[in-house]
Length: 315
View 1 (spheres, rainbow, N blue to C red):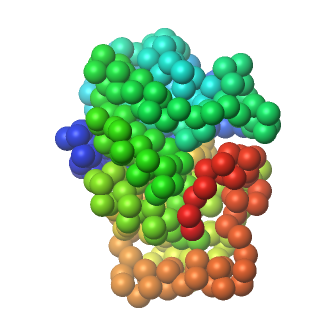
View 2 (cartoon, rainbow, N blue to C red):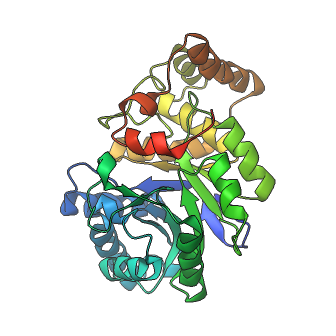
């Protein structure tokens, strides 16, 4: 895994295969067990967030192998995120994250959403009345202070559209290192990837399989005949093909499974090679969906639909 990393615009590296730790059940023992298994398989990038409730489990699971010398702290990459009710003070929010993790620093701190919630909103699905005015400049200034204080190695954003990226860069002293967004063969984020490429911002893909298993997810990606056919051609699995597509676009991926077999399967995507014909066929998937007038999966079913409406993403 250590050879599968990409260089960010600040000189730091990011493992291109990350393990997501969100779980609806948020069972600490299950999460810790999955992370310990993941480390043995070679995973070194772990993605968490305050709102996931998984930060304590991530910290507990990582401290033991670090203390035992099985892995060095500098070889582990931990990403967490600023929840939308903490925009008024990112420094304090990150300090609390570090307490929950039991760590002195994290590798990446992301603004979870480009919207602000009232200070008491500590639940993941806000109502319209929970929102307040988003002072992006003040939030990003706080993120930059986190970096200056050594509380994190890199700062970035999540769920930022091209428009929001350009607004941020009008005043930012530090360019975001990463923009983590939903991306998969049926939502390719072409315009956003072009914008991020222009400014040297790395795109990291969450829900790279379309979010199957989530209430707002879909199996349309892995069940698609094109993905199935390519998988059969390469003696691979549909999940591996979908993941390899994102990696072939220069993105990293955040995969979420606590199942041992699927965790190994996801890792196998690193070794799969897709040819030009495969990529051309995959490109047809989104075009066919748009031509049929279908909306993209999480725009209609995500619990964050309210956030998405305020997000003003240009498709």
